[in-house]
Structures are given as structure tokens and as C-alpha cells.
Amino acid sequence: MNLIEYVSQPWPWYVAGPLIAVVMTLLLIFGKKFGISSNLETICTIAGAGKFVDYFKVDWKKQVWNLVFVLGCVIGGYIAQNFLMSGDQIAISDATVDSLKAYGLAQPGQGYLPDQFLGWEGLTSMSGLIMMVFGGLFVGFGTRYAGGCTSGHAISGLSNLQLPSLIAVVGFFIGGLITTHFILPILFAL
Image (cartoon, rainbow, N blue to C red; front, side, top):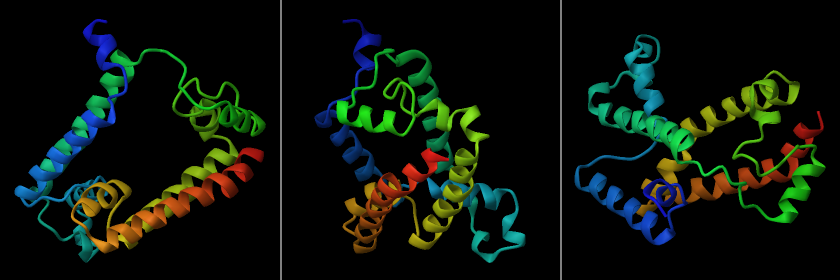
């Protein structure tokens, strides 16, 4: 197995987990909090939103490290998609494949996101438009109301043993289950 084949395989939990723990330990040592949604706050602050909303009157220069992290996520995602993907079908259960086919999705498991629903064609459909607009509003409101996003609460907050993060993560899972079992079937039917 060459290096590209090796790194294109999913990392096992015993590698990925300790790496996340090391990153979280370093963030704690340096007094930083991890989260993706705080980057939107930083970008809005840089764009001048503080002139209109007091919430955005913060020193954005203290958050530049987090913007570099997001840039690394984008670059890493590009590298993974274009150079490290094996091209194999995604390993999902037969029951899941049957459920997705019943919703009308063609070739489930061929990619991480269903193109017919989340591709450019899907985004111009009624269900795609509803999902993007209302999903974006709910995510934006929920992130602000919960004081952070899923990654911030689930990784940073839980590793700091914060009760509000535990409550938020439970809420995220409940919302995900409701969406999966009740809302997506309606959207797929549109």
C-alpha cells in the first residue's frame, strides 16, 4: 500500500481521538476556545457589523488564529476531495440504501452528499431551497442562542466538562433525529 492509499483510508478512532485530545489540550493551555461559528462572528466584525450591532464590537485580531484554522479546513477538504478519495462507494448499510431509495434518491452511497438533493440542480428545486433557507436560519439562530455551534460545544465544551455544552449537544442530536425521521421525508417528497 503506497502513502496515498494509506492516507485516503479513514483514520481509526485510536489515531483520530488522541489527535483531537492533543489539539484540545493545546487550546486549553493557550486559553483558546474551538468552534467554527465564531469565525462568522469574526468575519462580520471585520466587515463592519459592529457599526450596526453591538454584539459585533469585539477585537477581531484576537481571533485570527481561528480564521487560519478554517482556511486549513477548506484547504484540507480540497486536498482530501481531489487527491485522497479512493473512489469506492461509501460503506452504508443495505437498510439505509433501501430507505434512501424509497425517498427517491438515486445511487445512495456514491458520495457523501446526495447530488440530486444538494447539488446545483437540487439547490434550485423547491425542497433544496426550503432546506437551505430555513436550515440556514435555524442553524444561525440556534448557534447564536446556544452560544456556539456543534463542533464548539461537542468538542470544546464537552472536553471542558461544561453543562451548557452537554445540554446543547443533546439538543443537537434531538434536532437531528427529528429532521432525519420527520422533516427530510417531507422534503424528499416535494
